[in-house]
Amino acid sequence: MRRTLASLSLALMALSGCHPAPKPKPSVPAELAWAYPQGPKGPSFDAGAGPFRLPGSSTTYTKAQLYDDSHMVDWYPQDHPSAPAAVATGVNGSIPCASCHMANGAGFLAAPDIAGLPAPYIAEQVRAFRDGNRQSSRHGWGAAEEMIDTARKVDDPALVLAAAYYSGLPRTQRYKVVETDMVPATTPDKYGWHDPVPGAKPEKIDDRIIEVPEDLQRILLIDDHARILVYVPRDSIASGQALVRSGGPGGLPCTSCHGSDLRGTGGTPPLAGRSAAYLTRQLWDIKTGARGGPSVALMQGVVANLEPGQIRDIAAYLASRDP
Image 1 (cartoon, rainbow, N blue to C red):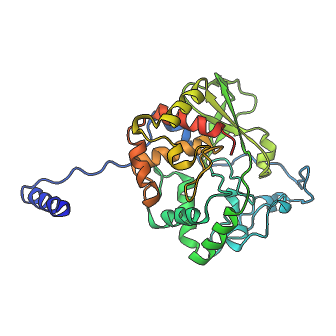
Image 2 (cartoon, one colour):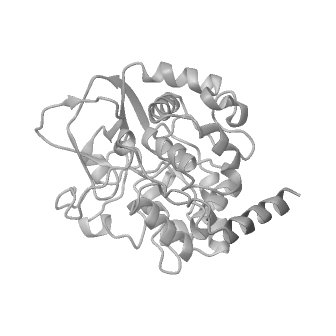
Image 3 (tube, rainbow, N blue to C red):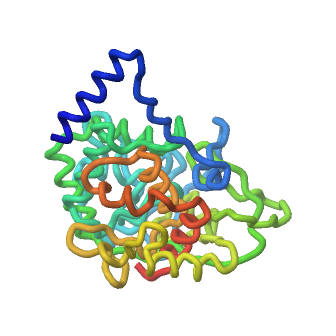
């Protein structure tokens, strides 16, 4: 009956020359621009001339090997089992999953940690990118476009193996959250994160969250053991905790689906200890409709009335929790 009435309404509108208002395109408000940094194309920082070594690793890489996307950088092979082709070398012309998500699944700046996620959930998200159900609220957002391109090249058999591999890995403590008034000066990187500006004076954090490497050189060496500092505004963690526990305007506490410890339950992904910038992007993308699909249908109602500042505080609190 509802479908019949909706069809009749559309028919009457067409006869009268009226048309339903087009759905607004997803966009990013100025208050959340920090979560979608997009720098100009050009040279990025690099680690130097090489060859390179890291403490605790017996591996050596040249500069050419380090920045070669045809294979994964794997400083600590003892951390994980043998990786399938999609993770280690890519398939059908795709870049390896580990190029962004690392061999241990800990993720990188602008790329989420995916270790320990339920395998069906990982596969579902890749298919969402492939099918157009998962995009970005920011037009031309490089990380999303690269993921869409990769998802279209990875066939289902390879996807199943990659999802099982990452699902079987333990999560690690990648992020350290710091409440502060001042942050290191940064500039947007073309790959979607913030680069520190050496020698520049610290600047006010204002209403932003800023994620930067604790040790820039280790990040440049693609060290998946290196930590990322997450600077958040003062009192944002307490504010976020209240919103997470109460459900905020949506009225459904995050713990209802993601577990009392926010580490996930069943097929629901963990939220604790994840990148604050990444969480902010996902909440906003779900709110704008840029990210859709069955797994986020319930979330759309939860985030519908969240303001940008509330999303920021929720992300700050979740990032501060132990994974």
